[in-house]
Length: 187
Image 1 (tube, rainbow, N blue to C red):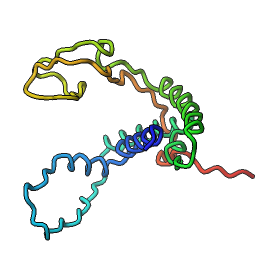
Image 2: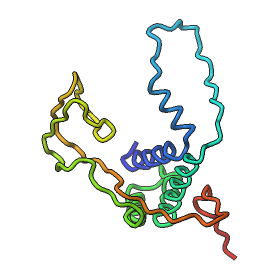
Image 3: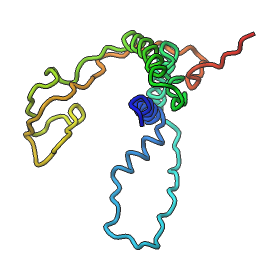
Image 4: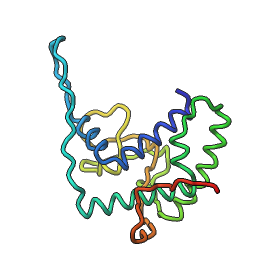
């Protein structure tokens, strides 16, 4: 796959996991499943039965509403969903690059208008860092040759991002936040 095809796929996967709680749950559970050491060759795994879907609670509805509103803003300002849903295999890298530049400009503008971001770590990329026992694993992802217990010393490859603030508009009463972008009909 080309770089841009992988980039588009990564964006699509990210947002699919972010906005599809059922898929995210299945993927989360799948990472914990160990494959048997030796399975009989004739044994076929049973098809996965979807878990019964509970009605979302008030907190989950608020989280979903916020996520859908942010996706809607990224679509409106940067046409991000259009870009991710477009089949790009037949386009040249130059065409994809031009489209990505426009999407980047609008989505970045929307991101800065509605969020305040800060690095998850204060050190510069390339700095040597030591992570003590009990470090916050939600803030730091270990990569490379990970062995043993902390402390771990390594090179900071990316400082990460933390959302310091988010400023989403209030939804208008009766507005369906599931409509990320309305259909357009020219008369």
